[in-house]
Structure formats: C-alpha cells, structure tokens
Length: 445
Ligand code: SF4
Image 1 (spheres, rainbow, N blue to C red):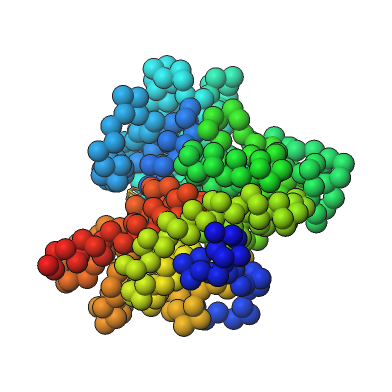
Image 2 (cartoon, rainbow, N blue to C red):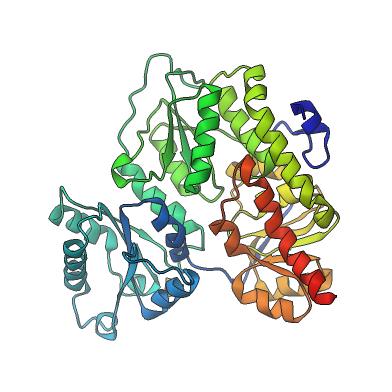
C-alpha cells in the first residue's frame, strides 16, 4: 500500500483538516455530581515509568483501598508506591503529622536506598488538615540531599480528577529540569538540527522506543521524553526546545514548560493511523524534514496500522458510541473511532476541555457530535438511557448498573493502562472497543 492509497482507504482517511480550529464548536458545560477517579490513580502507571521513583501518598485508609483496588492484582516484591496513613490522632490535630511524616520517610529511605526520587502525594485528608507537603518536600530534600530528591504534588479528589494526577506529577518535575541553552541556529519560531524535541506524557516503554526509532529515521535525533525512565535523566528545556504532547491532559505541565522557553507544536494526539501521522508530521515540519523522506519513513508503519484497523472496521462501523467523562482522552478516542472505524459518537463528554491543546482534535470530530465538558451524572445517565448507544465508555462505578440495564460498556480506565499510542498499537486500540461488542453479541446468542 502506498501512502496515498492509505489515505484513499476509508479505514485510514485522508487528514483533510489543516488543523485549524473551528471558530465556535458548541460545548455543553455541566456542573453537578461527578463519577470520576481522583488524581491518585495516575500513580498506577507513573510508578512503572520512572523506575527509581517512589510515590508516598499521605492519605487515609480510603486512599489506600482505592490504590489497592485500582491497581488490581499487581503485587510487587518491592512496591513503588505506598500510603502513609493519617490516623484519627493526626486528623484531630493531636499529633504533629510533620514529625510522623519525617519519621516514615526516613524509615522508607533507609530500607530502600534505591529510591532516587520520592513524591509526597497529597490527598483529601492531607488537604483537610492543611498539611503543607511542598514545605515538607523542601525540608526532606535537605535532610536527604545527595541521595534522594523529594517533591510533592496533589492527587486529591478535591483538586484533581484521574489523569490530572499525571499532569500534577510532571508539573512538579519541570522546575528541576536543567536549562537547555539556546544554540546557534535554533531561531525563535523555527527549528532545525540544533533544536531539541521534547515528547511530554507517560508512554509505555515499547511505544516510546517505536516513536524514538521513527524520529531517528526522520533525522530528528535530539529527542527527549518526559517523564524519563530514571529520575536522574530529567531532560533539558529552554528556548531551543520544541515540545509535542503525547497526552491531552497535560495543560499545567505544558504551561510551565512554555514558561521555561519551550515552544509547543499543535497537533492531534498520536492515536490511530491518522493521529500518529499528523503528530509526527508536526515534528517533521518543525525540523524541516523533506516530505518525501517523511512519506518513505512512515509508509510501511502506516500501511500496517491501516491493515490492523481494517480488521475491526466491520464490527464497529455504524455503531453508536457514548463517552462519559473520565480520562480527558475522550475527544481523541471519538476522533479515531469515527474517522478510522466508522463509529458514530453521539455524546463525547470530558472532565475538562482545554481548547488550546484539543483544537486540532475538535476540528476532526463529526460536526454533529454533542460535546460536553464537566458532568452532571444523573442527567447524563438519562441521556445515555434515552440514546441506547451500542457502546458506552464509562468508569467502573457506572459500568455495572448500565450493563444490568442491557447496555454494553467499556471501562475507560483500561484505555489509560493499555499502550494505545502509535502505529503499531492502532489495532489494539480498535480491539479494545470491538471486544465488548463481541462479548455482548455472544451473550445474546
Ligand atoms: Fe478518596 Fe480523596 Fe483519597 Fe482520592 S484522595 S481516594 S478522593 S479520599
């Protein structure tokens, strides 16, 4: 398959949009009861990414239970996250929680000298008793200087939902990133071989390696990833950096990187054949990669992605899709599922809609899609029941009741835990949506 043939195929449609954001996409804003995980959940994928980091949640037994059940059956000989439980005495202000925290951290670091970066992660209870974890992190960084760096962020349900935990963790890393000096030739507004590319957002190692090989084949060699695999390998940032977000929920991190001089490239996110191509193209254009080189490097993986997607198109084409707000990936998923697999998104809800980051995605959504920002869960459940979609993507708490009502569901959390970015994972992404429909079909038989 040639690249133009790939574009002609319905399974891999032509990237017709120039990425321009439609002036006024209607968005319904809802405020009400939310059914979304808090930001602590991000630890479940972050602790696997930064191999010498440890996440110490300063929270309650509820937080510990959430982490245990969200992490499922994952049991590690040397776990990389834990909960320092605030007991009633702490909550009642009878004990000095700071002293206890210092003692717990000292005990942990003595037992685990391999921990190079310790995150103190705030929770609802630590916020309620106004435990200042940023000051605690500064203090503990001084105490354990030369051995372990201590940072803090909030994963509290009062401040964050689900994927915002990753944004908060990466934002905490930005001030520690070394400064990249502006090199000759890295003129403002353009980029060339003197400029570094920073890919921002936790990706599975296998995906990171694939993307790294594609950038190398394109001739973009100075590529860094945030977060790094080792705490000591924080990438540099400065006016010579251009960044590509690999995840759509990193608004705060992007803002801080921009304040350090990085220039953000605007592109759809690297999901599906089309999104991955447009995402890579944004970097290729910024680094002056000739079009024929881009085509020859991407032709084979694009063809593989198209073939993998085509295998699922028959099962998904024309099926109606309803997305509850969870991961902020919803508009991106709706774009892939509608443009590359023929699904019909009737409602696409997302906890927050960052138009600046999401513009190129919104430009690719079917214009009749109902976009919702925020949540009023009862009203949304009513709409979902009225629509009777073929597939509903929602959190764990909503999935069982909806299944009991005869609706077919997909757990949103799996989409964050599964490697779905890049060409080679396009088929896996499609299969995640085909599987529940297949299962529902078998159950009906
Ligand atoms: Fe619950 Fe808050 Fe703990 Fe999250 S941080 S588990 S919302 S108490």
